[in-house]
Length: 141
Image (tube, rainbow, N blue to C red; front, side, top):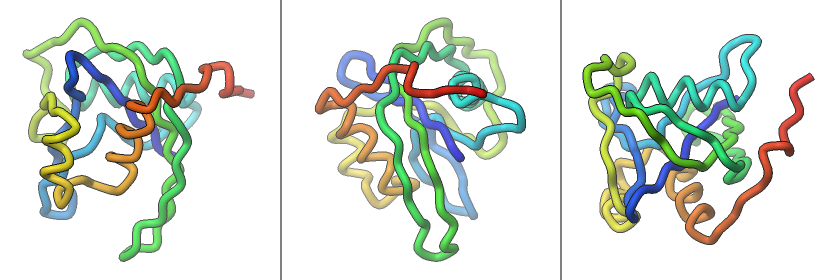
């Protein structure tokens, strides 16, 4: 289970450049769910760790299932959308994260070969079409 944050400001999306298996890729702030953590708490934590921004999830952007072709590892991604506030430029970013960067959809499309997975652009496109689900869709037992 993974989470991702779709954060748009003035036509640009908050993305991260990270090193995965020796390759620089572009992704939303995203990561794995920790033990005993809710999906909402995980996306807030991951965004903070990877970008130094505080994220305020307002809706679920979508749920995405993808199997990585080489490893055959399957990912279930819960993507959230909302604003971010309170940036701390002095905060050290997570290991492997090179930088947080604001990019337009066009810039992302022009770097399609660097996207970490097809889920990256799909989350952006679903966001841009207005796809939203209430946070109450998630039930933590």
